[in-house]
Length: 187
Image (cartoon, rainbow, N blue to C red; front, side, top):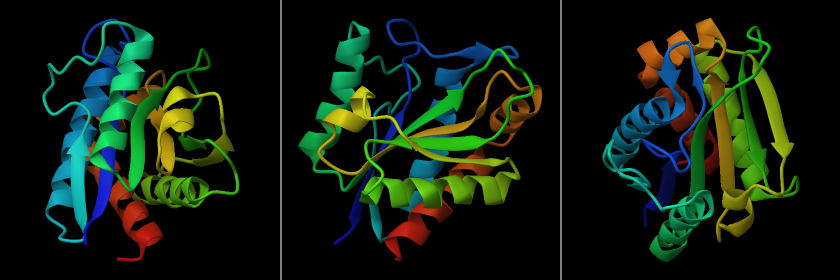
């Protein structure tokens, strides 16, 4: 039976729950494009089944921050996803901040191991620094998902190099995430 991967393309096209901006780019557009490319890789692999939180660039989830996050988690839970991966771009006032990192609900979990493999996959393919995997038990999508969940900060939208790489080569990030999923699931 295929492993069900839920890809949450972080943020909405417009508020509520629009994402960070930097270097003339918007987080929600980057996460959307990388999610689409990742879904195509997973759909081409018979070992996986995939669902996107935002199947179109115009998909708007919820009418408040909380209802937007709740809609994503409820969709994944109702679908019976085996894994939940929420795609994001990081932001910092320090424009030299760079790299890929992930957050999970708890350290001793399948999510932590999946996150570690996904971060390593992205870092390996893109050349961005591996900033590690950290516990953030307060994040809604990690706390409320019924399956192992990872919130992936793919790169810094506020760093000109990271931002350009995510914008110009979304397929690299999709490939890195896909490789991390493959490494973790062993299929």
